Structure formats: C-alpha cells, structure tokens
Length: 88
Image (cartoon, rainbow, N blue to C red; front, side, top):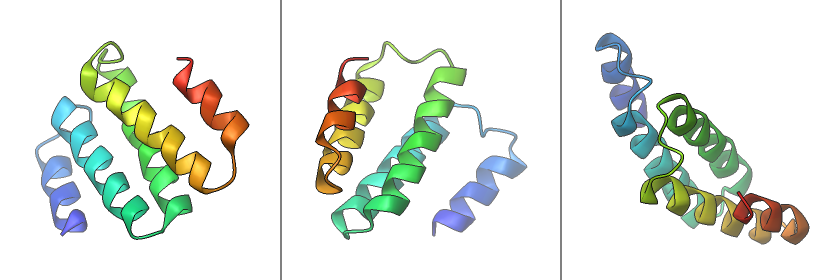
C-alpha cells in the first residue's frame, strides 16, 4: 500500500508536501508498533526532512513526529539521543 501511495505522490510531483510528510510519519508509526524500530526510524528521518523542506518545523505534526522519533529511539536503547531529538 505504501509503495502505491508513494508512486502516486511521485507521479503528482508531491513528494515535498505536508501530506507526503504525514504519510511518512504514519508509516513510521506503523513500523514502530510492529517492532521494526530501525526501519521506523529511517522513515521518521525522511518525514522530518520533508517537514523541514516544506517549512513546517513549527507545526504540531512536526512536534508529534519528533516525540514519536524519540520514543522509537528509546525502544532501541538510545535514551540519550532521544533527549536531543526532544530538545529541538
């Protein structure tokens, strides 16, 4: 499903939009809930990049993304690094 969604965003030239960032964020959440923390974190980083490219780093969605990234890092035993994410 994600592959089809990503293709649709690519075809529409919409990979640098809030909606695409939100899609990545949701995918990261799903992966994190499945225990696929490394993959989730990689997707969260992509979402963070898109949010920042779009100038959306002061939105509640971005803040929620950072909180989810930090939680994902804690699950991987990276408490110190997770605190740095929350300081943004």
